Image (cartoon, rainbow, N blue to C red; front, top):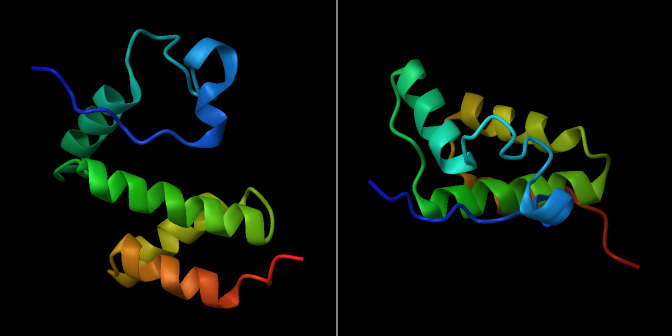
Length: 98
């Protein structure tokens, strides 16, 4: 079964089209996400959800430090809020661009 493309983050274009995790082990991001979700007993996020998660991570990382990105996503999951809703919250506390 062909996987729909995963939205790409700016870092995903490094190393010949491979992100930081890359495709070194022969598994693309969509395949890894689906396998991880399955192991957790969850359904993998759809393309729109992935895009929203990456947007949330980008807002968090660009508003402070890169480490804020995964923590913001974790906090969103802990709060049980959809990523699209969390993006608005993240943007409301992000400093204004110069």
